[in-house]
Image 1 (tube, rainbow, N blue to C red):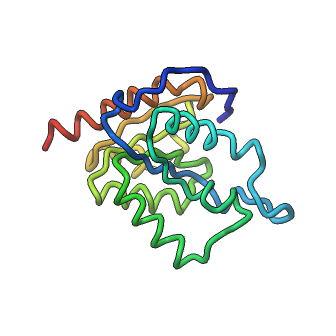
Image 2: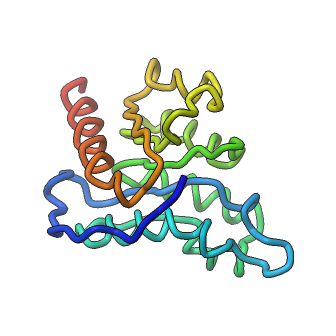
Length: 174
């Protein structure tokens, strides 16, 4: 998945009717062993999404940024408990499941589902068959919207619309 520079937009947290989002995605598998951090290219999709959500007044929970893109990795027991707590606190869960699949992100998707969170998954367009059956079928047991894209920045309006749909579906089902 590529990412271009983000487009401008009007900050409007009311467009979601939520105040926070947990943003998940591949992390430790992207940390370079020599530099001890993710490459700028790998950081970009997350940075674009974080900036987009924060411009709209949302609080963003994100392990990548919290752990300085790999430079300040927390011990497993600590980051696992914190991720789970932040997913539980967040109003919405948004994630890039990863190709190849990110084991940590898949666990986070399970937590979000178990907590009854609205979920938006960003899948690489044209590669559905590379995502596991449980990722593609998660909507059968949880409130999930899928955004298929090749460029995160270009897909921001679709991400916003997917969040609105997921939140609305969850509220009307309640």
